[in-house]
Image (cartoon, rainbow, N blue to C red):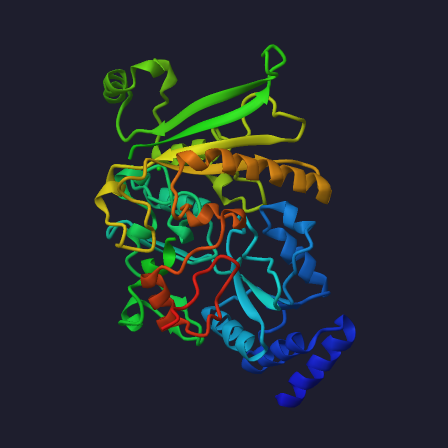
Length: 434
């Protein structure tokens, strides 16, 4: 078997000019899975590499950036393949980045700076088991939120799911104020640790504070969207559109008196309200109103992107869209202590702000100009947001906002589960120095 792996390694090196770590990883993985490595491991330069790498990049500016690309792509078909990716990555001196939906704003699930790395793409690990009687579901890490919503709706039209966008960083959804974040509702998890062991909540023991400790970082929930558009009739040449979207868990007749009493300035009328099922509401907030639930199964980049930042009016310039989205907290979020899980944005936090910009050009000089504009917006907002430190929801990460401090509790957890800091990125929390 060693001879076969060595020959296989030499053939790949000759064909694709691989580096030492890449060759080492390929041989290691093949030794552990001699009958399964073909179609699972994709070397840089192979026919499948570019297609797989590009298939799940939601922020296409990283396709044109100078950031380093992975040495190897792994598309595991089983949990054992994930374990081997970690084990072989360590022995081959390749860090592991894990990609699920590919929505990372800084592309940290598929690009890196300064060190060799591999990407474990979970596109094939998408199993979903929904237990309506118990009100729970096992969701494989490669499944999208759309796939989860679709499966729940197929099992029963009544239940709903708390998460919305990016549940692995906490999970903020339209029912945030009713049920909290997705991470607040995790009851168990299966994960591979830095030693390549497969653990669940029971086998974790006292190693960490449970699955949601690693996870975190819209009841009634709403979004306030500010979007700037061309407006020649305006003295300043621009108009800011404000739109209010909300999900109310009740009827139109129940909602209107509440809104008239608490938000009379909005002037909400019956015709402004649309009564719909829960699954219809997920399509609405995904910008897919009128579509069948099967539309939630489309995984292609941009196919299920929130319509909120881009709908209505034209943008400041052709191909541009600039906005920020404010999700109100409160409700259940005020009831959960900030120390409950690794999601500290609780009582006292009024809104969660997402800064959003979109442009179509690919030239580096154009990209720099857009990013500089966003940095100016950050500076403008500084007096109005959290400070010392300036906090941010991890799923809205931006390296321009800085790197995290070393929170004692999370640094201690990191020291227990990954003292060598094998799992790391440009904004991850390092182990405790003690």
